[in-house]
Image 1 (cartoon, helix red, strand yellow):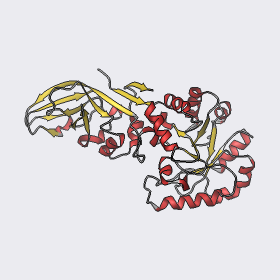
Image 2 (cartoon, helix red, strand yellow):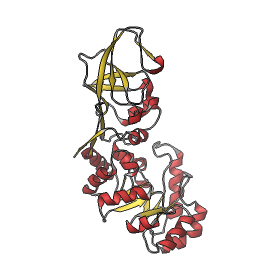
Image 3 (cartoon, helix red, strand yellow):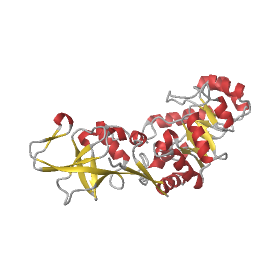
Image 4 (cartoon, one colour):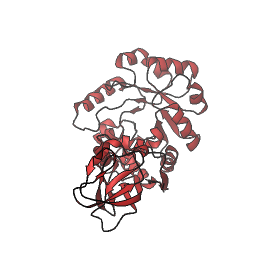
Length: 344
């Protein structure tokens, strides 16, 4: 079966990073966790490094190890999950910088790797990772004596500029870090867009680099073209796909395209999603199955050879809305069967 083609525009990705960086007066890192949000961390990070990025963030030490192989010895690679049990040799050998999230992680790091770089993650109200205020007060002097590279926290509601949680977390972060003389980082993509007060010394954009909301001015990075396997005539009253969920209300032409939920086209999109052929919108119909999707192409002048699921006419967030989810899930779900084509 012919495979779909996932095109990743590295030039657009770099321009998105530059546009976010231009909104700040501080250093700007890049988050490349989850294999560069599904688009290939090695290619993504190398393109960003050529553009001047010197600091990267990933989720786990194993991701950091792969990134170190791709980037070489110079860039700073930070690990959000911190210094987990069993990570010591990897952190030491590959010069990774864990964001320490707990007193236990702090003890582990200081005992196993004295003098090795680290940052500290503080919990300012998200209740996900990081030291709470009382814990930080108890170990602050010990941590500061070891010269952390950064003090960081994470905003829970930055994609909603009016949410009161933003100002609350900002005030908490300042209370926990003011006057300590250590570089600070609070803002990811949404935090950058909230303005200067949230930028501090380092921002760490993720989804905005890859063309996703809340960065509305982002250039599209991912394009997905899916070949048509077959076009068939469907009579009025006939059904298409599993469970007979779509019935033709007129004589129709239906294209079966070569992708499905095994490729990250989420089944939940169902009949809420659309695709495009030469700029003309065509409805996805019937159940999305593992490898195939039906598309109503009745109104096209000619039978198509392929359709566009992602690209200039449809963003990851549009597809996400159809599935009742967010652009992050669409990007990170894109399957391994695609032929990948990198531009730039």
